Image (cartoon, rainbow, N blue to C red; front, side):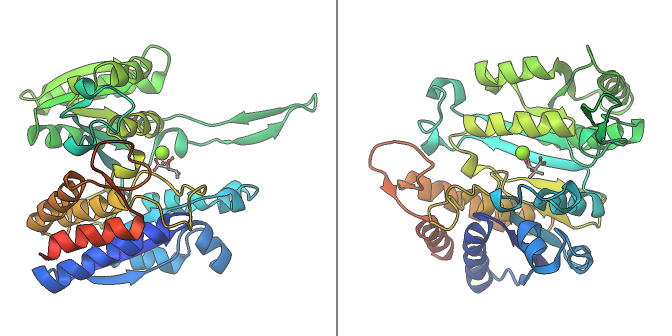
Amino acid sequence: MKLLLLPGDGIGPEVLAEVRRVIDGLNAHHGLGLNVENGDIGGASLDRHGTPLAPHVLEMAKASDAVLMGAVGGPKWQGVSYELRPEQGLLNLRKGLGLYANLRPALCFPALADASTLKREVIDGLDILFVRELIGGVYFGEPRGIETLPDGTKRGFNTQSYTTPEIERVARMAFDLARQREGRVCSVEKANVMESGLLWRETVTALHARDYGDVALSHMYADNCAMQLVRDPRQFDVILTDNLFGDILSDAAAMLTGSLGMLPSAALGEPGMPGLYEPIHGSAPDIAGKGIANPCAAILSLAMALRYQLGRPDLADLTEKAVSDVLDAGYRTGDLLGGEDTRLVGTEGMGRAITERLSA
Ligand code: IPM
Ligand code: MG
């Protein structure tokens, strides 16, 4: 099995170094036999190859069983044109691999219930799975651009668009995953103001009636969903939504779990395609290079790869348990607030503690 590591920018390289440590532990003590390669993406790639995703790196990704990315972006590349932005490297990789479904579990570890800005009784036991459409919608819609109008002012525009097949394939993924959970899907859009949202609702409803009668389906407007996520997040099982709403709502949900530094994700496409696994926290330029970033989201992303793609769900369980145990033992990176009897550690300290648990 071959895993491509793309450290990228900001805290990406630091957290992926800890993923590497965990892989070494799993290879040495649990017969994982995973071969690791490294590649460039984002600003790091722009600096080295003049593009945020070089063609040879996309080829390396296609030839791997799975890809694990750190993060992309940072103030250094803020002025760069859109086609060359670090973020474009990630978007091109998602598109190039056809990764249409982004799974983002928002799970509250018991030890972290007090690290959330919400009250423990609201989030204790939280377990939501976001299924976000990843290669359509306003992120990719054409036409897009900034044009100058006759009066000299400008107009910036993007296109939100979804086709029936684009909606159906990601909805199928959500329904299938719901069957392995509590069997409830909440589909989120703005059908009250957007045609693409109306088509989304109609398509999901028809697919449900046709093939998924055993799953409970509800619909919600995205603004209401944002409110419900902070009011009573445990009402949700699977949330199915589009690219932009999924980006926003999953960040909000991440904070419910205690820290953005805890949430992994998996981007999946057609069977046989490598998936892209990444922490959802981004490059965090303010703390990059300080050795204080939380590596848990990246390590949990590895666990998702082990489960969904590398054929080792047993080691996925083991890795998740190691993270949970280390948190129970009081280890905390700086992003995880409070709690009694806790021990503040850096990126490496957290990675070592998790690896030690795994190797024991
Ligand atoms: C995410 C990120 C990306 C997105 C950026 C870095 C392009 O925010 O994965 O949530 O908007 O999809
Ligand atoms: Mg985001």
